[in-house]
Image (tube, rainbow, N blue to C red):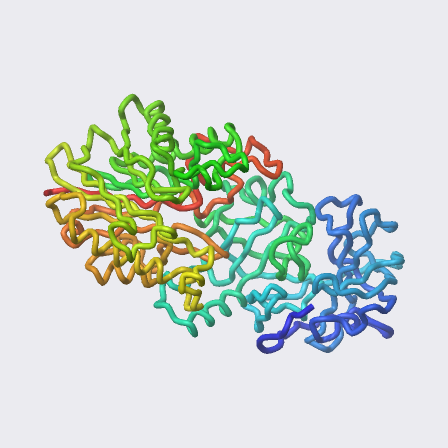
Length: 610
């Protein structure tokens, strides 16, 4: 294993000492790997965690148990615990408190020191008190993937007790691997959500996050556990577990491992000794309460594709792109139900939609038909643009004809309008001016979806500079400049200065694309409404605002309120429309809006006066 110590050593609180002969601490040593690898040893200790397969205790199934010295040695750098692997059908069923004599081969299994047992004998009983542990760790290290993680090497295999309150900071792998991420520093935010881009600052940010983060595992090695742990019931009495909720007083064994089935991130995991009980510090929100005569929303539809994804490249304007979204008619129906529920509760007069299948009108028609079936005929209509650009996805607009009417033609910004706008990577921007029926006041809404951070743009001369802005930042920045310049030309011939830029800009609050728009005179309503705490998306255990609403200065005085409606980003993906990996269909509830998408909607209230 290539774990290298990054900072200073960790102080281990002493336990009572053990007798002579080889000890657990001798096997562990004071480095990342045991010096006794390949040797057969016999060691005595107390069982502190029972995770055997096919035994009387089904609370865990890691194929073994944790053994800890009855009395600790005097070296704070060596662990007094070790994982003993005894396979799928153990010859000896052990339980917590058993005193054992274990003989076996010392191994390093993907970085974890283990004893592969050939003999397990119960020789008595005893007790080991959990060692007090607190975060942040005094040191950090790198795993074999090159990721920074806390360094708990001196506690490997030991029973620990964390008295402090930890915050749930990610639920992405809860359904797949039975794991969630916890932070000692509260909700974690993306670096450029609150800091200007900076290489040294971003490096420090990553180190701080790593030292204060720990993964809570369910103690099982099978993927897709059923039921999904921690979502409700005894673990979450107040309702579904969400990012931002907390837990206090965890006890369990520390293990260095990947997730279930040797997948997922290689990191330190706490295997709980008892079921944790979470506190709902971040309860689910009800219907959005926002003033204003007119309501506008930005809504990411999470790849709404009426064309079912069969694996064939039949989507996009060229009919040669991969399809996305639903893999069956049942999944599509579930997806549309969630989106309809969420949009009906938002009750916006104008909605900018992102991640729609880029077809002539089928994706928009499906949403409008579903909304009108739920709310009444002709409640919503859509701006009929046909397909836009060449990507598999595009933006679109729906509106309430009783409230607003499109004024003049829509306009599209792509590379044919401004060669600086890279529409091979950014989706073209869509602008439409609307007139409010009550007073004929005008508003131009501009829907955007800029290049994501996920894939590299090095071939385009735009590498990740490791300043906190990730991949393709310059492509997004140049697109933002192009959008601002385009709007100066009044592309929809609105003859009105009121512009509202919405959508997924794939940039956090202080990143260059947002700075470019602010330098052009636009004001970010999300930043004003949520100073220091704005977010619409969670990635890598960190929250951040990717979805924005920016207004021209003339429109600012007509804004009554702006909210990020946190119905999606904080929720476990298990609540969405998908049915893969054997998910229980009954988990889904299409009458609630929660996890209708992976992005939170942004909603703006307006009192238009001109």
